[in-house]
Image (cartoon, rainbow, N blue to C red; front, side, top):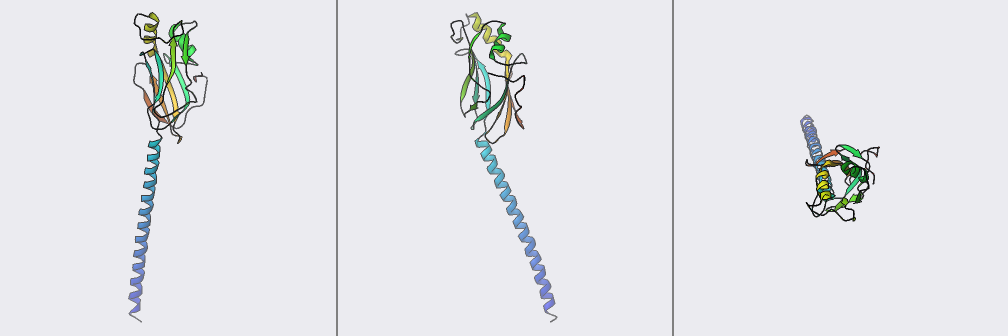
Length: 196
């Protein structure tokens, strides 16, 4: 009978040791599972990540483009277009600020509320001459020279989201390189929102 007591203590110690080991192994399995889920989320996130670019060009004509260089669609939620850092409501107002009052011809495409597919590029604004033709590269044309210079006064602030609901704000245009910053959510339309 006296020999059984140390044996029982030994079994209790061993079962405590087994419980600690089992708990530790369970905790490690939980950590590995959480890390795997995190990595899968990052892979899905990378697979639907849009990257917007807003730019102007003078070849073959003066125009502004919006392009998605990412691998996922860009859901455009809010747009602000500015001339000399002052918001404009539409391209007509932008043209008046660039060229003065009057009837200015141009063609445009929607940006706000648009879904830009991966590798899609869209011309969003093209000024046109009196014959309603795009302003093709021509240094002898005073209107082309003016628009080529004035296009650098136009900037855009575009808030867009991925299909996972992650959002960014692109600030681009003008003479400086564009910047993109992550944001919690896009602003709601306001008096300074760009409308087409």
